[in-house]
Image (cartoon, rainbow, N blue to C red):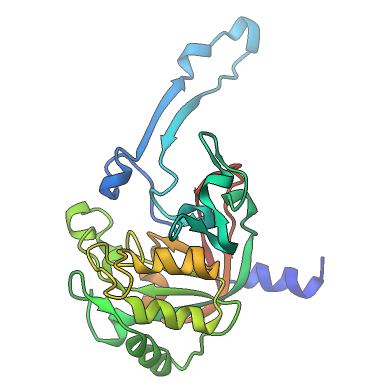
Length: 269
């Protein structure tokens, strides 16, 4: 490995952008119950000094929706007119065991430049107004105020301030989101992925007057533009320390044919 890269990694400050996972964390209604973990084998169960000596082991069972907690959407997660990205018909690749194309295992490790647009901070607010819609102009003005440019190949993350309410599901589900013009601007910038500190990037109740689609970005970024969506990020510390540009690391798990994966994204500066 290049010595300079090793030195940079050793001195980098690491920001963990994942929210903690636990029973009772915020879950979108259509993804409930969402998360369950229980011990299957306990240390006391296997304590047999005459066989294993003093060593014991413990393991558990985890059941969760792909789209719970901090996660990334695969391109097969959404379709528009029953066509997925690259004009692939849903029925040609869909089965009870998942998707033969565009599954989460096809998402490459995201090792690229990250840009934070702290819209709440730029507006001088702890959190944006509930269910408010972030426009392209607001994203542009925020970028200008931060003196950053969103470029092709970047991961763009947007802070609404609702990540601080992760322990309050009722309030967290009232989060602001990015509107149609904001999503289209992100695509025009050529980003590889977008991320946000809310449940859906969009505002679920907002409907596009032109197409009639709700969750406009999900019907546009994934199936039309091939841009991944990352949700439920924790951007609080990154924003408080005004780290607007950073090295982004996000590596999905290889669940063959799955529509999404848990993610532990990191920002390195």
